[in-house]
Length: 432
Image 1: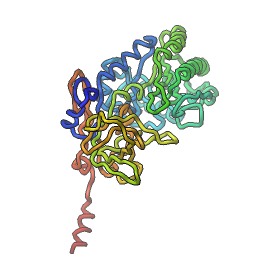
Image 2: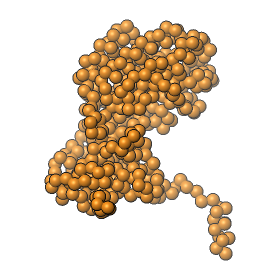
Image 3: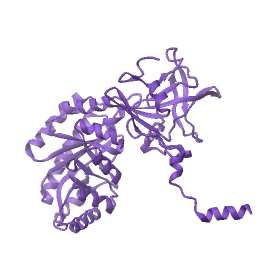
Image 4: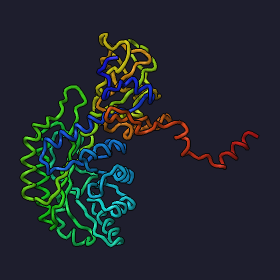
């Protein structure tokens, strides 16, 4: 097997034998390197908050935090994950358009840095729960701005959206803070979109968000203790896409950051990053079970599929495009390429991880890797389809592999199901 297919000196084939396939493999050096590159490129006053939604594994969160990442969470479990990973309350923000009473209460009890409020009804609930506790809740307003900026693979602002409060509604409500005495308005968050691969779009977004934050602070009469410029930095997956050039981005963004920070020296500047931190560090490793031809096309049927990697279907794209994929071990590794359809074990034609992709000749037992798979993998996929369950997750740190999530077994999936006595009685009656 080629030495190219190792992680920190450990052959992927060896890991496959140890942990079984399919599994997700994360390279700790890549995670650390991403954080280091960001810290070195940008104004030191910019703080990076890891969006757990992209990869909520507690070990991944803890490793990123060890290298400087804070945490942006969107559920009770993500909040608990961040805390157990060692993230301090003052380095956590909580987002989401549909927060429950229990989630808001937990944020207040934990004393996190900011609840990012997304509707006036939510603001009233935060006020109520804060009053019950005798505290003032730190709240940053998520704003749906009047402007929109091109360059996002998935737009989340500047149009009618369930996210945030419209800019015009906020500017027309100068008494908002006074009506909620147990809320301490203290910041602004704007998230324009995700998968942004244009440096200038990031700069333009940030410039406009800072301007909007200053206008809202003045109009509503609250201090800017925190401004969250979103993030959405993209990762190139498909042919024709290019990764962001951090040096180019930093050259244009740092003056914008510095200008705002100099005007507001006590304001925390926040950028949320999920996919950008974890995608490149992850590989989905799967094994070929069968090869076959159908009407002249080659098919490799594997033990992994879209139940673990729904993103590989091309969700959000009008045209199915392949994630980068490579042969990790097999006899055909150095013998040219053929055209293959790589499919999984599911009983649906949609279970296609790669369509008409160029790979070496494949055979049963070969290992394949779907690269750039460290974000929005199993947690954004229907892992229980056909009752397959969640795959294993393995993290390599300092040259050692660690099982950081055990795979689901049939007993795990059945353990949460219940067979009522009434059904057992009906079965017995029918048998008689």
